[in-house]
Length: 333
Image (cartoon, rainbow, N blue to C red; front, side, top):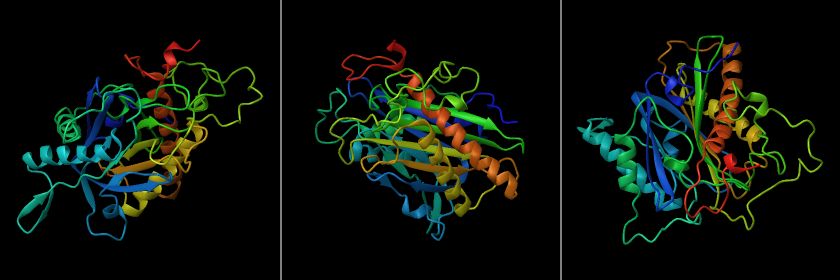
């Protein structure tokens, strides 16, 4: 039987820390996941409008096997600077891939578009994201907040504010799998115009309201609800799926692909031409278990379930702020 880990957070996977930094005036922020020690990583990009840094090195055929950290950030392409800040923090800590007598921290990153969310984006020459990335890395810890924090500070969906969410599962094999996600989707996490979450079948212990399914589905439940005037680069759900299993880079990519099923379970529609939907995968190997084929199937199912729950938890935990362009789930009636 699968159950949440002790924190019900990404950090239930041994060896991972998470930190946030945000700016209320900017209505944006960054989130950093640090792996101690470096972890095997992969990525799967299924949205049509991604924004990324250092994702090519995650291909199974490429040389670098492990990463030191991952960054999720607001700010559209400006937010890619957050990885430079996280990299600076790690370099000061003596972390990185050793080459020719130098250490180069490996920090892949992904961004979401939150420039038009009502925040003040009138910075001067340089954007604030490098500093936000450094601060987020310095804040990394086992416990972290969800909702309108870090990369989820200014996130939105079709009809409510998005947010930063996380969830975990301990599998029957003893492996742990956990998700972290910044929800800024073109689609909706809610069924029709209701307060009910598409992710309801996967909820554990009332973690995002305990509403379950509506007594009957609305007639237009399958009608897509999307952000009006959707355009490439204007949306994105970006996430990390992590496990303490021993995986190769190829297997990590397969885990990232499986976690995308959680997007499809929790958001309607997902993976559109105008989303940059991306999942990074991390495998710390801390369990000492290299999963057999049956355990791999359970791990993939757990990844999808944890991701769906994390998406709903991020939206559920969002909090109101001055200048918001959309309501929070908590204010719906």
